[in-house]
Length: 383
Image 1 (cartoon, helix red, strand yellow):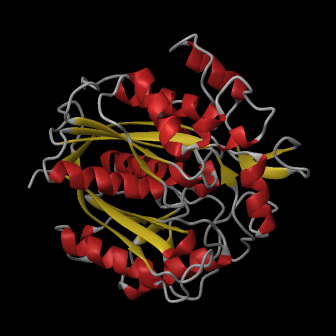
Image 2 (cartoon, rainbow, N blue to C red; image 1 turned 30 degrees about the vertical axis):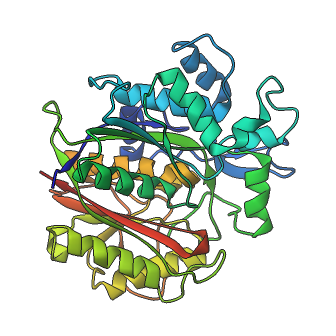
């Protein structure tokens, strides 16, 4: 079986338009979350991580002067282009594939005043993916993954499995989502939004903070000799079907996903796992469920890192963006701080990393959970 190397990446968020800018902000513990008064998104002020529109359009104009692209499509194209910048991949080859991970796609097209010149058909995820495919000249029809907030991790696992089984040589996984009134009002209706920037796992947390962004990670059966090689070494996707929005109180689905991932990988003990990149939404039910699942695995001594205090919850992009940050942690030998965390607010013992630490790391686990009881876990390791 072939190995899936993680050879290139790109992050676009409120913290920057490339991976280096985003990682530098994380290492300085700078958050992209601000208080916004934007009536096009919410009738009331709210905290969020939002990409500057003028900067986005300026960066996109460096690629093309065409105007027939939505905000979502611009984020995807910019991130994919950024990831491809320093590597040589033929997008028109039979053995190259694009996977698009998103929860909402062009959801802003629900607003009849938004982009009136663009066909409402592009609200269909496959249609938006086709538009991106045509511009970037991918030969193969893109694969769309839309499975709530685990979409990004599912995209990576799917890509790795296809490469391991020799179906493709190179796969570009792009995860992206934008904020709209539809998205913000949906979480407001759940009373899930925090009145302050989110505080993952902290006793004073009061809900999640939304964000928008795009992350692209490129997997290949061939290593990139210009960087320290990191491989995908195991992963699993589960669904405990607990509730349409509430996570399992026993952490069953996530526990099974982590257990199966460990069984697939060469990392058999907790000493071989440097840290766990948690989903960490800062909602009481999610954080408690993750802590229980990790405790059931007897991983309570492994440091946890949550990044939503930097980016907010970027939905379908979260799994890709946070995986890229995790991979950079392995390469740099640095554990990122979970900003917002001060005192534990879960009922089982876990170690939440709250300061930047230099540490030799050989492997990490990235986990994600979402509505409908879906869960995913992936393991990345030094080669």
